Length: 163
Image (cartoon, rainbow, N blue to C red; front, side, top):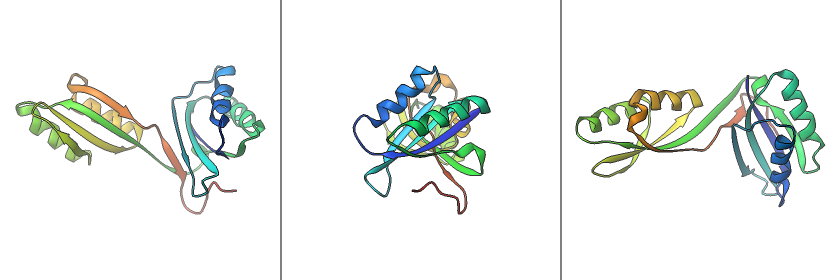
């Protein structure tokens, strides 16, 4: 089962390496990883997407909590949450395909951010499933290049990850 683990940690050199090393040592896979400073620049928020059953996720959480730099760990998948991912995708757009790509981008609420005579670069945000569905809709053969940020998530309502 896919899980989103959110980690607050001290923003210091080598901290992220220890988190990644923890996953590597135990043969846990990181599907996506996003890291950025929070409103307090001395603290970073790390969002990790991984797969595992409850036992594996519990083990990951316990191991993360043992790291000195880690302040707090939350499995966002346990409760109601919002998740988003950003994708920039460069696609072939010539002839009648141009209008089809434009129409499909509009349906998925994407923005065309760069245009050449033979390509469009589309920016999309949404769940990973939505981004995958866009690729399927335009046809994988149209895709020239794809860049994705990885999943960022936040709990819904009053729940928050803070010190």
